[in-house]
Amino acid sequence: MAAKNKERNPMEVITALAKRRGFVMPTSEIYGGIGSSYDYGPLGIEMKRKIADLWWKEMVRKHENIVGIDSSIIYHPRTWEASGHVDGFVDSMVDCKKCKSRFKAEDLVEHVKKAKGLNELPLTPDGENLDPDNPGYAQLPCPKCGNRDTLTEPRNFNLMFKTHVGPLEEAADKVFLRPETAQGIYVDYPQVQTVSRLRPPFGIAQIGKAFRNEITPGNFIFRTREFEQMEMQYFVKPGDEDEAMEYWKEERLGFWRDVIGIQGDNLRLREHGPTELAHYAKAAWDIEYKFHFGFSEIEGVHNRTDYDLKRHAEFSGREKDLQYFDDQTRERYLPYIVETSAGLNRGMLATLLDAYCEDEVDGQTRVVLKLDPKVAPTTAAIFPLTKKDGLPEIARKIYDDLKLDFNVFYDQQGNIGRRYRRQDEAGTPFCFTVDHQTLEDNTVTIRDRDTLDQPERPKIDALPGILAEKLRN
Ligand code: ATP
Image 1 (cartoon, helix red, strand yellow):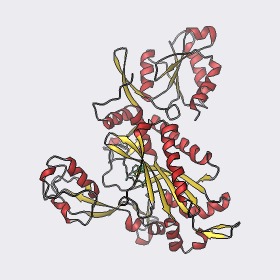
Image 2 (cartoon, protein in one colour):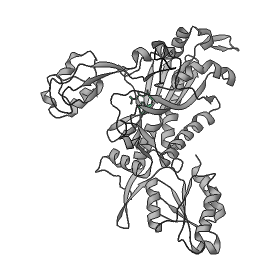
Image 3 (tube, helix red, strand yellow):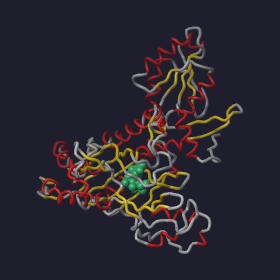
Image 4 (tube, helix red, strand yellow):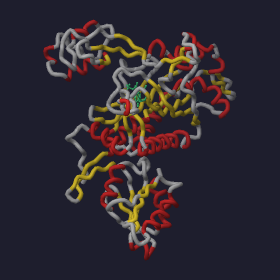
């Protein structure tokens, strides 16, 4: 029945819906907004929190050997020297002197390949051997305005946001906003392991903001400069990391598919080729969603070896503290780390795009977000059929009895059909309607968002149990 929206650009459609219904909107719009920064509105914050809570449940509550932390955003600046971010967290950018567009050097060849006139290119780079020092960049035509000899040579640019602690902006006080949450886990690991009495394999999880001064943010909330990560670092005995990678790859793919409800055909696992691997990684897999611009990463599963702990041992001089001591075998070693690193905002975007449908109902186009009930901002809407005969009072009482345990919404304005449509667009899976039969037998209708059926009339006191069942993992 449901026909996916194919004609228009799905990102534009979802961006408009997100703004119209208060999922996600540009920040500080009264001042014209600020590039690629977004605020989450009443529906968006509910959905984002649900995804985050499901992740937490999946990682921390499901696994006895995983605990959570919440570390600060500003770490000791030596953290970023040790991690390699001060020297290595750079992108290479190219500007067009004519139209002022800016490109990531690594994206440029792809842009140009896609653009018209490829065959006339003076060079045909293969896209695999991108070298930031390659002087050939300046000869490529600008993918935006098409002019030649207007591109600058690539310039390296550190993606970390810098700021100062304290009133004096002296070099010694320079700090960074964290570009990933992982390092906060590494530097806290000895304490967390001790207080929680963990033995490898064990994990430490955290959800929090990360900041990257991206050169080319865009695609709505796909790439922003401020975003949230859901990361789990899994500490294993050296030699056990391959098995851990296998386990976590499948677990994480299963999370997006079975828990969040993204269609399996739109997800895939992709292994990084040798040229793609980050400096710290021995193996890396991306979980990718089929966006309309191509399969792209929503989460990475990385074998980071003992690189990070080794570096922190070296830079802090606290090697012994960072080693794990096995009191049974009397062995002392630096654990290897397998990381699962997901983008909360990017995952939410994939979930929204995946759920968007349009179909025809009663000769009209119906917009519906077929979100899994677990991630839908509102689980059930409660309506009185009319404003008369005591129906609103009964409906309100149902709402009041459910509201502390479930996300429910009360609405008595307008005709019932329009009220249903508004909930379809917000992704609300169930609507309970109080009608005249309720006065006789204490039952309500349940209208299913996807089938439009109203298969049963449960008693009012059965509603909490029905909702709890629908939300079960
Ligand atoms: P990309 O190649 O897209 O820049 P990445 O490989 O640098 O991503 P990681 O460092 O592995 O990303 O970060 C883990 C996750 O954090 C990504 O899978 C993504 O979901 C999210 N993420 C990274 N950068 C951003 C960003 N600028 N905006 C939103 N989410 C991001």
